[in-house]
Image 1 (tube, rainbow, N blue to C red):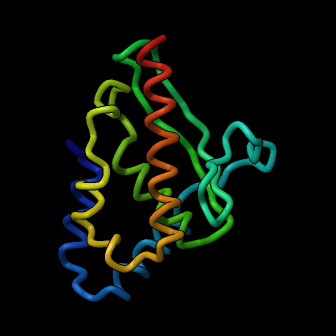
Image 2: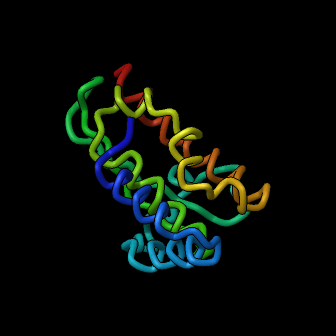
Image 3: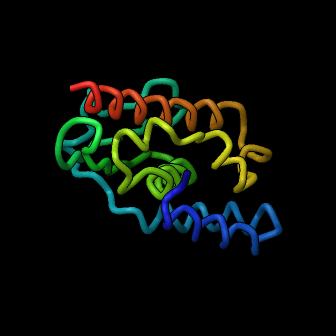
Length: 142
C-alpha cells in the first residue's frame, strides 16, 4: 500500500538507473521540503536513532483509526532531509490505520535506496518509520 505521491516517486526512481542520479534526486527532494520553525526543534519531535538530527512534527486530522496522518519534518543533513521527504510521500494522507499497514521496508526497497545507504542512514530511516508508526498507533488507539 502506497500513496499516489509515493507511486510517482517510485516511477521517477525507475527512470533514474544510476545511483548518483537517485542520490541527487533525494537531495533535491530535501531542498524542496519546507523547513520547520526553529521552535519546533523540540525533544518530543526528535527522532532517536538517527546519526543526523531529525525532527518529525505530526499533523493529524480527526481522531481514532480513521484520522488522516501527515507530518512536517526536517534534518540537519541534506540527504536525510531528502529521506524525510521520501517518507512523507509514503505516508502523508493515509489514515492512521493505513499507516500501520504499510510495509515500509518493502515499499522503500522499490526505490533501491537501501542498497546504497550507509548502515547509519538505514538505521535512521528505520527510526523515522518507527516514530511514525508509534504516532499512528497512539492516535488509532485513542
